[in-house]
Image (cartoon, rainbow, N blue to C red):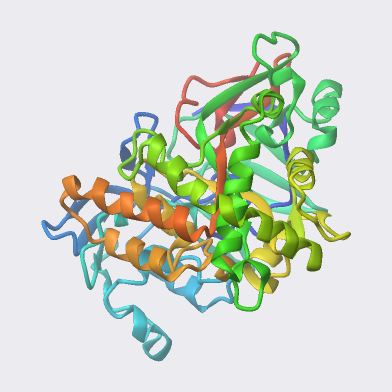
Length: 488
């Protein structure tokens, strides 16, 4: 373990909102929390699940039970050892909290655990069983194919509250001071990554990120895909360097289909999807989006994932909305559409305007905290330009946003047929059945249109190459830990 006698200044595009694991409801919260908290497992650079808080695990043949052997040699930043009870307590405490999102965040991977529905009455979940310090067993009511992977999310980390402050077993301990996160090394951390004696995570709006990197106000920028930095263009070799991961974000237009809203009419949703699809084929616009590193793709499953449809079928399904476009244009004139967004998407606003869609005068950019409130609580906009993480290679990753118990589910995008299909998909154990089942999901998304899928962003980090370099360990899809950075 090496601790460098330097301070690392890290920029992040927006405020993280919370640093308590079970309340995690945005990628930015996950980004900062990954540096302090550790779930049972994580996805490694080779794409496989690897140990973290759990040294090993066993899954029953019917995928209804998992036994985790806890690594009790891991220690919290106060020196206390990790135990199985820390996970059970952390999850159950999370269920007692008022959620930041629409659902209880940890319900995503726990709602089908035995006794979950009786939690409010009993105060505990009988299917989460602690046997001594090092054994944690989870029993499900039905097969749960992806339970281990989902328990690898930071929201399922073990944490403790010491004097009102949450601590974890990760590489750093965090404390917020005047809107800046101050990170200092967890002296009891088990890992071997190089760490800085101090890290400051500073909110750095995308518009000023480039100049702050050049001036030295920050050394690195995480989630740099939001900043559209010229320095990240292909072939650039200047002081500011960029490193790219895999497809990390689904870029979507979320559609408010709640009763009484304009887009409660399925024909209007189909029309919007067709209108956007046709206009994105404009060669000038494609050139602009390539510069922004947005890879256009109308499908919610990646090319290698079960559930991917042929391009011919996708186009046929989308263009079924073509005949409804005039009706949508006319409806928007009578009742203008309220569009909200956080990231700059003037190109999208121009696309809608050029196609004849009328937007409200108050359509435009909102603060990230307001954006999240709209998604999960108030549901004011008709459309929200945003995105969600590409979680893993399993098609169940969509449950996160479209499943009824999904951690980032919004009632705005609730479409019964899709939610039921995703629930059923979690029980499939025969992998040969995944593709036909999730193709049904893919078709349902294009037919019911909870969102219009625009494409994918690649995870990007930018850094001042005079100050830091990227560690060789930065090879997985969504590595949020700042231990990817090393001093120059």
